[in-house]
Length: 352
Image (cartoon, rainbow, N blue to C red; front, top):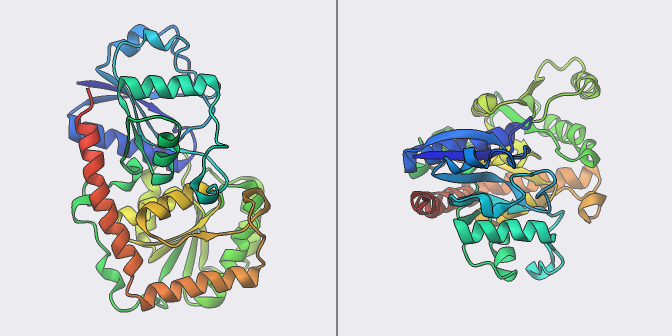
């Protein structure tokens, strides 16, 4: 069986993680021969090539926004595609969850709705969270399934996923390394030095490693050098261009930061992860898994700006709760991931 995987991985390490884990799911559950195709290219002159596959899968990301045919050209004449088309673990894109989950103001262009209805009728749509599921259902779609994001699933771990033994009774250790993921949104760049200072104050013996998921600009390098000063325990790493170095997060005792796929990767390993939400993607995954939502409160998200002292109080109160509750939310999250994997398994297994 041959599958074309339409991937949105170009620079961001999180997109490469989605691509990698989509490919693994298709290879394991369908025994498919998977070809990676970029979804920012037009295939109008290559429909014969697409029709030579047994199926076409659009893998993950905030796909359900008005990107067809602009950022995602695919083919203009959808009726020329004669093989089943699926969307796997996709989501909507919003700054914040609408009040009372009312998505009536979230509108698709005529072209985007045509694309979604085409996929819904041809194959099916796997949703990465319940907000996405309810948004589609509210707009009259009825071939969607809650599968979770493909990046949730490390196939070597998922069936037995649980909290790693390293946490034991003691969450905070003097010799630990804390992994910090960088903000995705430009208006939140000032939050990174705040977060580093907060962790320096509260964990003076810890090493702090900052992970940049989309690369490091010259100005970011200078900022990191100023931030580190003479503190040799502060370092940084560039993850962009692949998902290979996600494994470096496993050398950290826990993760805290802004990148949704840093959060997802660490959860998939049984690591403790604290996501600071920048938009509704983080709300969606935490809502689906029963984890605390911590919003950083910036103007673009419609949330009130908090100062560093408020930011510190929220984060440290949550970390204290995590320890005192014996990681209850995380044990529940791993259970949810294991159970939702059954839906993902069924969805993929019934493709083509």
